[in-house]
Length: 129
Image (cartoon, rainbow, N blue to C red; front, side, top):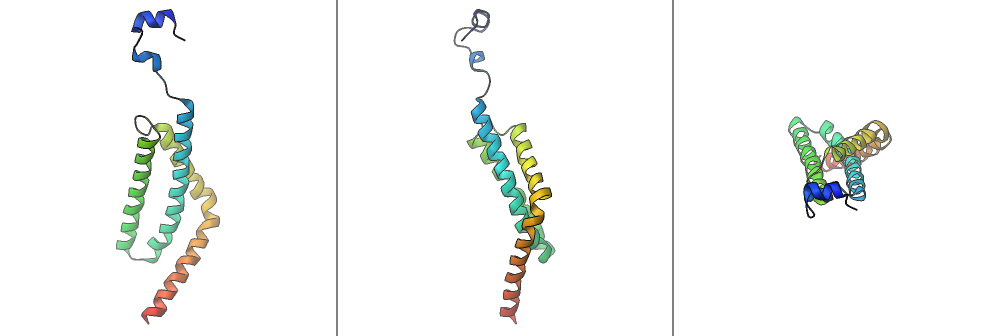
């Protein structure tokens, strides 16, 4: 419902009538950003064991790959879920979920990846002997 003052000030078809974003769309964008933050934490755990077990060049490639994945995730969130690109709240949800994974969940999941990586490494070392 338009107020008489707003219609008189901006006109009947002005863009000021539709200022603001849909709350449901914002909630979906923030939830998607949080999910991508958790997925990035999981990817970081997977790449952590590769980085520490391999040489410096492989570690650098893993870091570049991780940064490209995080950038791509934020770009996709901005283009798919947000009207004009990802905003501060999406970035904050991404970082908060990533930090929650790294400082909360990672300690219980990371050893699984370490054991998996060690088993694969042992198999390759046996084949190369």
